[in-house]
Image 1 (cartoon, each protein chain N blue to C red):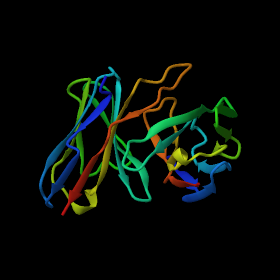
Image 2: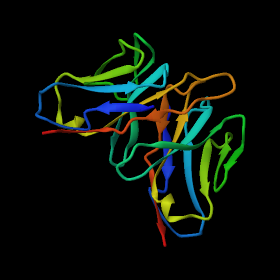
Image 3: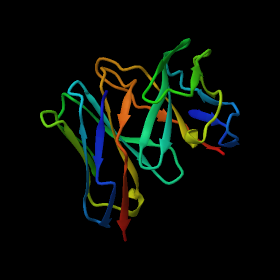
Length: 116
Length: 113
């Protein structure tokens, strides 16, 4: 079991360029999430998905788009990168909550993105 | 939306002493409160969590307490060890489930040998 994986691990972009970050999980989880982590600001939710074909906005969605065409993959796109999007991006996945138990979010290793 | 405040931002304790990290939340509907540990350059990992129908939960040297009336919850680490050095994040979920966690800004805990 690889758990949650992210591609790429590092990337440097110029302002205005576009890119896609790929998240994959092999735990058959329904829910997937994209966070960004900036110094002193903790983890902030960008977008999330509660199932294949569905996505929803989180706390900081502007400048990002997402797609969940397959249950195991969740893609994060930056159409026109800006220096303010320099951050570490984490993907996570989990089972949906049950009546008795709430399932933890499993995080990927992160992608360090620098926009110059 | 939910707002989670976490204190202190940095904490240094002698090895063997206890460490306490506190968080407050704003949404009275929040009902799930996990704590994550993140070592340098690594991914966050869940260490303990608590639901709103429980006031305290303990797992070996780690405990979490919840005061719903005051809307605050705390992480307690006893008999600290060097491997406890990391950044700790609290979080709160404002919905029934865990699909929208709001995180605190983190506490960098350093254990002094």
